[in-house]
Amino acid sequence: MLKLLQLKVLLRLLLGCLIIIGVTGVIPVSYNTYLGLTQCPQISGIFICYIVSVGYITMLVAQIIPKNNIRLQNTIFYSSWGVVFLVALIGVIFEIVQGNACPKSTTGIPLCYLSLLLTLSILIVDSIKKQIK
Image 1 (cartoon, one colour):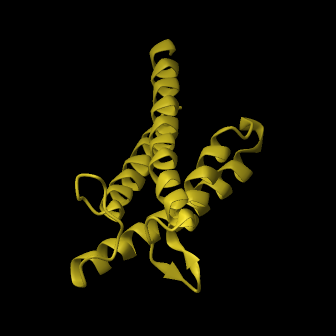
Image 2: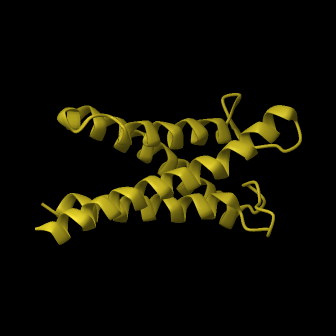
């Protein structure tokens, strides 16, 4: 019983760390876009990196909602996760088909690839965490 509780706490911390990685990865891109130093693609005049920033931040906020309001927590978390995942997936598709659709990391990796990998990792950790009773 104690080991399961420790595992659940560890998974919750891992989930929080993954989300924080997302936040700290997208905020500089959003800020640089705001300053005009880099350019994110736009949807209806809104930069996609802003949407992704809000998504990751909202996922993080959902983690601090008290456990007695699990329905609200899940609604906020999965809605935010879904938006970030769809943006990343569409970005990856455009990157593969058109090329040069997503901003790049300092190592040249399209950030939509990293965001897709991160959102899938978040989903896997969250799913494992929920299976532990």
